[in-house]
Length: 432
Image (tube, rainbow, N blue to C red; front, side, top):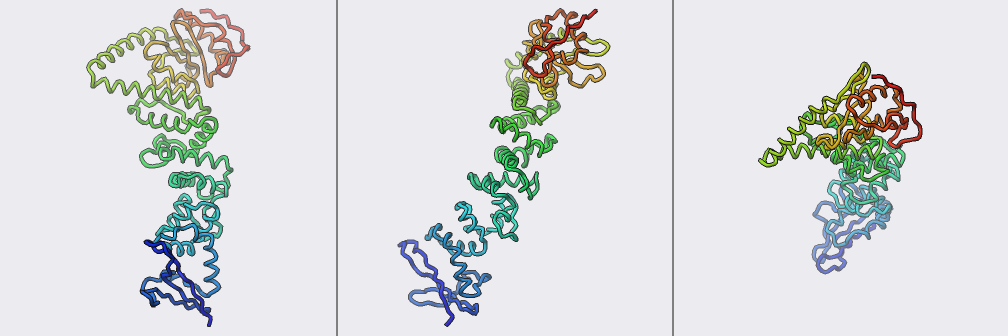
């Protein structure tokens, strides 16, 4: 007479036997009746409609259509679970559960189906974005298939959703225009060190006043060549922010090469260790005495070094003011001088800066001396002095004044990188 029945079959918790707990009688005109088994009798259900009061089946055909959609889903759930009704109703209300199952993301589907707040969990799964008006799962997530697989296909759901949320913050929700390589780079950076770059107290980018998007691009680019870039960036920034106030060197955080990052990391760590040793000395009489002697020795060394400074009408050759200025020089010039802070401090080597008199605070060239011999003279990106021949006479007069030795090739080489080439200019004749 136009009636059909849906039966709810479950496994009994203790015996594992199949039992029928409830039935829904459906009529073609849209009516439905729910009955529950009490002892051996079927009586009208007194409970909240277990099939969903807001989601009544309009007719038998629709009911069977909805049931057929679950053929793929239901066998994957444990029939012993007491929340099987919730699984069914959530799957009917949110087709994303079935779609996730079909794509192979079983765990994610179970999490949503088992949730009391599936809408919120879907939003969380997709990095804070969920457009329920769309029909396609990818459109709901606002992602391409590659991006979807990247986020859901490698485990660590919580880390991945947090990383995706941070990617959305710097690119906007509509990032499907990003090519795969760019997206993967952004995602990996935030997945690995996102808590430091973009959250809470550890928001390094904000505390250092950096362009977060530019910074993330830089980290991703360096990490393509060396995976250590993630941890080195994190360690360098965290160490830098622990330096004593007022001692922080000026650093360009957008490194051109992994070697620049490595040098900056080592330099900042060395400076931090030096400060740490100084602080510890306050708690140790013996250490304090040693530090005092080292400081007196350093002052005497600096007084002697001051006599080696030189200037003429165009250029100045001077000592660095402190370790922070040495590190800043290395950062701005992309050279390794920042790693020589300790050696300069102990007297193992001596560093000098060559500056134009018209631009006394702008890095130009740096000089390293050991035992009265010039080891190297390098400018930006390790270019040699021969690229700026106008400064050679000043350096020669400085060498003569202090009786320092220097291979003429160091003065006349025109290489633009660390390695020496066979190209040299003529050494000028300099009259004192």
